[in-house]
Length: 275
Image (cartoon, rainbow, N blue to C red; front, side, top):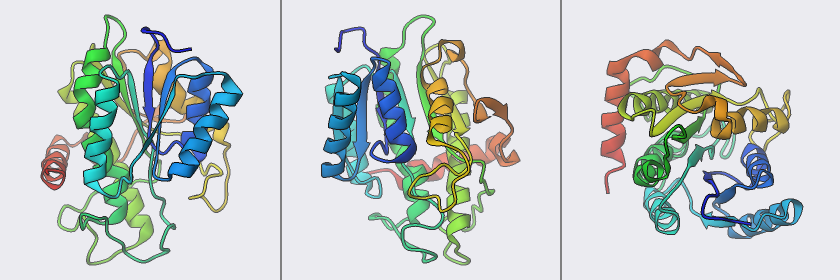
């Protein structure tokens, strides 16, 4: 089903919840979908399920644990080698406020607070390492796209304690990491030519029924529709540096608009993700 003109999309966290639904939706549209996750058995099963349901053979599976930056680098390098032209990157993989580990503070393989590492640092590194592939895929009137799946739950970054060593809570860790994603999207939008690559962020839907949500309110379908819109809707080509709540543009925490905060976060992230 794949052709030289098929648009290629990488969806991280594609074996469960929103990511799985999004991968299914995009495959059903005939796109070439690269599915990422950290469990080989589940990933291959998800790929086969989507293939059978959609008839789309242009699917690929990539395993990597985003809590290990060495694996993030390897993931980016494998994707870039296989797909030198990448049209869309959806940074969806993440860890919620309550699981795993309950209220205990945890660290990544690199010694960083776990939610900050997985929800923000991994996407920061993956995005920048894949920029050449994203830039190569752009065409006139059709820029490539970076979509950060963030949340309406946001907390201003405490630059004196980003790793929350003094007063940890899972909710604080989660909401801080989600705002960091928005700062990253806005920083990318300032840096990149919107005719070549755009960057947006969104809260896809409120409390979707995923493994990180104890009491669902919205449906997966609502979140998929909102995320797919930013990823592929022709009407949003060229839209960059915006945050959406579902399908409506919204205002994030004011810190997202602070260029000094964004520059400070980027400098820290670049340092923390350096090999």
